[in-house]
Image 1 (tube, rainbow, N blue to C red):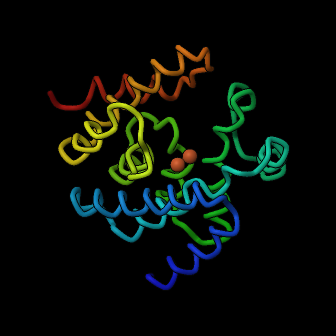
Image 2: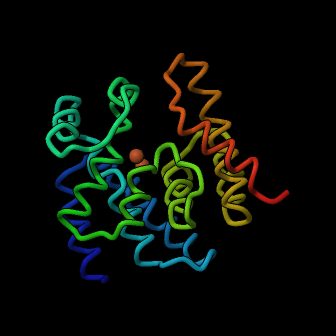
Length: 190
Ligand SMILES: [Fe+2]
Ligand SMILES: [Fe+2]
């Protein structure tokens, strides 16, 4: 498995820029720490952390073409906010080219917005992506600390912060983010 990761790293470094590569390594390391903390599969967590943004630097045209050619289900809002498609595209590539299993691919597919009723692995990738050591936004340290106490609370806090920024910037808001937040507010303990 270690050899797999080294091979994937080399591969990935050719697909994305240096900054995103460092973010990917950061997410891989954060996924590892969280997987140990929450008793999840460390190898799976590391692999999805490393590869989650592998399709992010495809152009708009490449993203739209990939989705079309590979029959990837999507909504009309996802076509407008097309950057979001990088998760689903990466999941499809990781399944076809690297043999990632269904849970790993689903975690990658939904890593930006989350979804209702996430598995531990899905939650780990979601939050690791938002708190890896390359992330510098205001409040990140608090969420980073919280993630090791409660994945749910850390995710809610991150979504709250992201919603506020998206409203201020007049960005589209994906309904999956709202569903994720509502679900966690209704189900997570205290
Ligand atoms: Fe991403
Ligand atoms: Fe990311």
